Image (cartoon, rainbow, N blue to C red; front, side, top):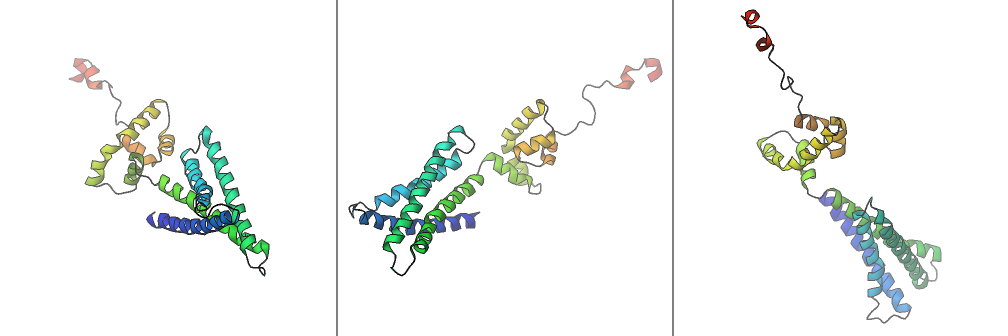
Length: 208
């Protein structure tokens, strides 16, 4: 996890730096004051980063279309601007198509690596549910037995779903745990509660 996040952050930093320098130079060539040209790539590529985080945070919600729209617009502007800068600044003996393709790589990599980083961090964030999922994959020890008290929230949800008629397998799939874990939470009774003692129900003459 740490290696994956560190690698994606490193790649995203390099891609951002290459795109930043190209867009800043394009802004200067387009008449933007040199002291302000650095702000233009921050606006363009910064929108990609912010929109990517928003897309992951709002995944599955109705308002997710807006960050997706911003993400697509920011990526389109960044790729196009990087390609135009390459065509303007490339050597005369370099084909314009080749220069544009090379320049389009950094913004695309920035988009992909940023999204991957956010997904990795979000999917492995520390919370009670994730902690219990880890506990389910480890052998039972005194330490895990102590930590099991922290999973009360999930067991409450499982109990409510069981009352609604859900099977143990369906509950396990919904909560992201093994079916055997749900079985430990709700073990089958060895005898029906409240069942009368047959010997007590027998007449005293027969019981004797």
